[in-house]
Structures are given as C-alpha cells and as structure tokens.
Image (cartoon, rainbow, N blue to C red):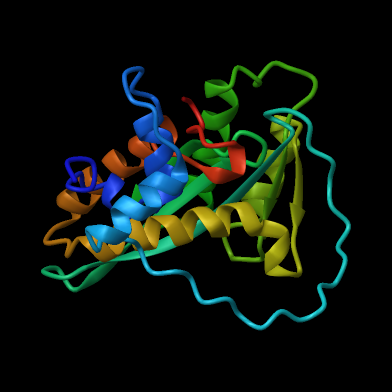
Length: 222
C-alpha cells in the first residue's frame, strides 16, 4: 500500500508491483501472491479491454540490434487550463533502449526546434562526429517535411524516413500513451511553468525509474 501511494507507482499492475517487491532482498514473493493480495485489498487495476483484432498488414521494418540505430520522433500536445492554451512536447525516443534521448517543451514547435533537439541528441549520445548515425523516423507533420530539417539532416549526415502507417512509429506512440495516462490526465496544469516542471519530472522518472515490460522489466537507463 505504501508503494501504491506513490504518484508514479500507483499506475502499476500486480506484475510490476511484484518486480519492485522482489528487489527487497529480505522479501520472497511471486506475482501470484501479489495478485491475491491486491485482490483482497481491492486495489487491482482493471484489465484492459481487448479490441477486436483484424489481420495485420505486414510492413517492412528495420532489424534493430542495439541503441542508436533507429530513433522515432513525434509531437504530443498538452493543455494549460488557467492560460487556456496548448503547449508542445517534441521528443526523440531510441527504439532499442526506449529512452527519451532528448525533447523540446514549448508554447510553439517549429522546424528549428526539431533541428535543435536532433543536434542535441547526437551530441548527447556522442554520435555527432561518428560515421554511423541513427535513422530518424517521423510522420508527415509540417516540422518533419520542412526544407530546413531536410537540409539539417544532410548536414548532420543522418537519414530521415517518413511513415505512411502509424504502426511504423509505434514506439513513440506507445510512450505518448503512457505520458497521457500517467502524467497529463493526473494533473490540471495551471501555468506553463508548472506544466514544464511536472512533465520534465515525469520524463526523468520514465527514463530512470519506470518499469517497461518491453525491455524485460527495467527502465531505459535503469
């Protein structure tokens, strides 16, 4: 119950709770026991409703075997209630390790902001002077199809590819779903500064602490 009182952990189901509890060397417990305890205390998270599955269309995709091979980028909007305006969050995620490499948070989002965080991401991963650089993947938003970004990609010697189907940008979309349910929906932002502070804290939590099932129950930088 102490774990579930935590703002971030309160979103976890019994499987992730089990992983946290198992990190206590004095505690021996399995997910079946945690499930029954949560059920007794009426704190089980509701099961996700499965959508009707249709046959999937096969898409050509890249074989990713390490970090810094494929990055995805996209924009997520947020709403500031007291100021009655939107803010923009532009992020770059590494498909292999699921880390948010870097991001732009602002009241506008233009091609120059995309160029800036792309350069920042390359420098952060110490790739700016390397021959092999990640492919960066995006949708067809105006920032991504701009001539300025195309010229920057040529200057940075990176390949930019644009998608036609949303499932080819699935990793950044999955991150945005987590951001929406575990951050945006939990707060009513009163000011831009408050939104910036809360979202920045969440991204740090996501990178360093949040358990991700897609990478075997660890955090991107865990």
